[in-house]
Length: 180
Image (cartoon, rainbow, N blue to C red; front, side):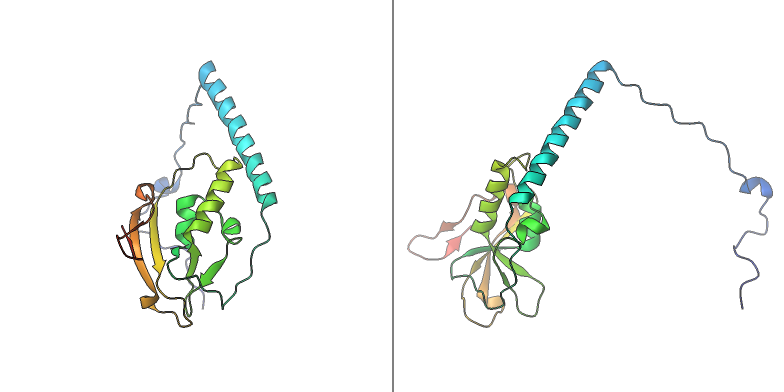
């Protein structure tokens, strides 16, 4: 059975409180000639950047299909998909052109850090990025074994921090292992 009233209201509610008060319109911002010129230059730069991005996306190859049997070699430095997108300024479509290793029974995808960095540099060289500076948090893993079954023991976190501070891996003296 439908409710008798559509809205709940206070017992002491007056009709005066229901009427909307007129508001004064917000004053229009008046720009100086210099500000207008700066805005015009900024719009032109944004338009040029958008055109370069469209041209960049036209040069991208078709996205790769998932290969469940693909494994990275031992010692390969890897990163996650979301980290690759956030830190390197890549889109979903751009990251889909890089070969990746799917994690079994998980939605995670491991991308080779060298491939992601190369894609980032190509995008910057094409003019589709404003700066080559990394941003956000970067997690770098090292592939310890490239066998069939995936588990936590197959990966080792070697860096988890600010992407701008990442200087690359360093190998320990006399070892094949990476250190921070």
